[in-house]
Each structure stands twice: as structure tokens, then as C-alpha cells.
Amino acid sequence: MVKCIFVGLLLFFISVMVMAHEGQPNMGFAWRDGKIEIDIRRQGRVFGQHTAFVIPFTDALSPYRMGDSGFTGIEFDQGGILGYQTESTLLKWSNEQSQWIREGFAEQLVISRLSDENIVTDKEGKGLQGFLEKLTNSSNFEAHAIFRIQKPDGSSPDDGAYMVFISMLGVDESGEQILYKPSVPFALVFHINAQKNFDSLALSQALNVVPEVKLNEYSRMDALFDWAESRYGQLFPHQAESRFIFGYYARCYDNSVCIGSKDSRIYTAGGILGDITEQGLIEDFYSQAGL
Image (cartoon, rainbow, N blue to C red; front, side, top):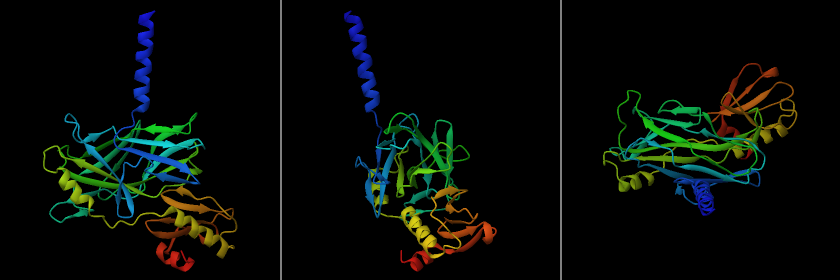
């Protein structure tokens, strides 16, 4: 009897510890008032106008891999599938130039979760979407992605800091409807010091410099699409929900016309507008709409 009680208490203790494990950093999110709030656990840091989460690679046995940092969320009450979208290519800190560089290095970032995997390099990887968690019986979640910094030739990456901007979002099981609109983009900063060549002081210096990266502003895009619907009703004859279509953040209408944005530009396609056509910089349209 005593043995059974002991085993039961041990199993309960282990289950509590597993549930309490959130990883470092605990990147906390909440769905409130129709938007995804980021860093509700206050484990990020202010990074210019953005939030940055520092992910240290500290395992001596696998110094270029990290699987302990956690994405956690509360109040996601619409079910569906939660994921991320990469909002930039990979950046690397240059000690020589004292700035974040966008090209000219071999390292690449691999983000994997279960069978899903994405690779981000200095040239490719912006706009990729990846899986985090499927919500079924709970509005809360905890997910641990695995991050790796590697070189294609198999050699060890340099000690240093690497960065990518991502956003959180959620869709229904078909992937067609956005249930949780994309969050404000935030930065993931990866710190490698395997060869003792890039300590915490060097990391602090890197985090004092904010790179100039054009990032999507999804709420502003939605406001622009709303304006287009009210201003050009003959082309966009009714309200429509925004969604991702082949890398474009877009809306489509019953007349087969679509309007979307990609890489800071506006595009139209379909119906009387024909093939995909670039219409200009999104900033110009923001100015025209008073946004």
C-alpha cells in the first residue's frame, strides 16, 4: 500500500514538473481583443521598436543546437493550428563592421518541429510558414521547436550572434482561413559561444544595434485593404478576409479579383485585372490612404 502511494506521488510529481517545464526563454503569447500579444511572460527585451528573444546555445554536447526554448500561449480559444512565419532572411553580427550583415556568410538557420522543417539563409527563407501546435481540447499550448545553426559543408559555424524576425499566426485545419491574425514581428537572436570567442559582453554590444529591416505590418495592411474596398468598390465589391496565398498577404473577391502585398509592394490579379501585376510600393499607398 505504501509502495503504491509512493509510486503515485512520484508519477504526479513528474507530471507536474513536465507541465511546468516551459524552456528558456519562455516566449509567451496570448490571444486578446482580436490580436496576438507577444512576450506576456516578460522574458524578451526591448530591441528598438521590436521585441527580441535571446536563445543561447549552451549545450556542450550539441553547441549549435537548441531545443529547450518554448513557445507558450493562453486564451487561444478558436482551435485551429498555430504556427510562425519568417519575416526576414538570416542576419549575422559582424564584429569588424559593428553591424548586422545580411549577406556574405555561409551559416544557415534550421527550424524544426516534429516533421516540419524550414531553412533560412542570408538569401532565402523569408515568408516561410512552420508548424507549432494543433489546438484541440485546450486554449493553452506549449511547443518546443528545435533551432540549429549550421553550414552546408558540415563545418562548424562561427561563434557569434544570428538573428531572424518571425511572427505568430493561426489558421483553421484547411489552412485557408486565418483564425489568429499575424502578430507584430519579433526577433529571435541566437547566441553561440562554443569556442569562447563571443561572450555575453559581445552579445550585449550586438543587441545595442538594431538592423534596418523592412517588416510586414499586418494590421496596417488590413486597414489599407479596407480603404481599397471603400474607395474602389467596382474592383473590390465587398468585404473580404485576408489570408496568405503563395506568399502574398491578400484578399480575393467574388469577381475573381485579388489584391495583396509581398516584399513591401502591392499586387493585383484576376478577373478584369488579368495576371499578377505590381502596382507600386506599399508605402505610397499608405500615404494615399492616409495611413
